[in-house]
View (cartoon, rainbow, N blue to C red):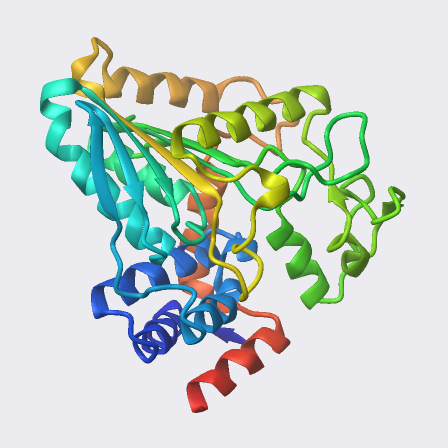
Length: 334
């Protein structure tokens, strides 16, 4: 059964407001979850809503908090998220940073004590559409094994980069693991096996069972290169945000602990440089028109697929796994 985005947006917003979220906070959190669904990323979509609601019910998350920022340097903002909803804290930090960009051209926000921020592309694209280069990084629980290891020791540690480039900003969003834990959870919910090579189970053996994968270790993408990048993000975020390192992180996958991972947001005023958004857009179009290996599959730019899926899903509706849909309907009726 497919539901229209507006119906799901209303449902998610109402459930959040029912747990004390101010309307603007509820709309922002719901919008981020819906955007993930629309772009074909259910791992960061509505399957996360029941956990968010449970954390609100238990008082682990403060739905009203926006976070408090302290300028440690002229362009470095240290943010205590005050256990607020991740998207609310991130967007509030972004707005605070704008106040200095006209003077400094660049600003950095290091965030701790905030909840899961969801799909990083959401923030990178918001920055790029406003003429800013946005770089976003986040850490998580220990879910990824190091290259050459079998034990989960690093977070999935995603990074997103948004760059103004005409009416289609360049947006790259990727985890430094082969896959996110949210995608494994989505496979488990749909009772679908996961591809070989994604995960090792708790005993260090390759597995295609999504249930066994939940207690195992995800592979870094690209072998040693992905491992190195993921480790660099782990250290960079912890060094600036003062957040815990992966083996001691909790709170993005459970409803019992405060979230103690870290987030990093870098904004750069693109107008401070000598480049041109239009020249970048022209180059990206040249890439799209370059000779493909398979004529049936033209060259794409990161973000193109998400835009196409979004346009299609807006028309056809969003199909949720039946267990998730039943859970959300029960929460609405409660």
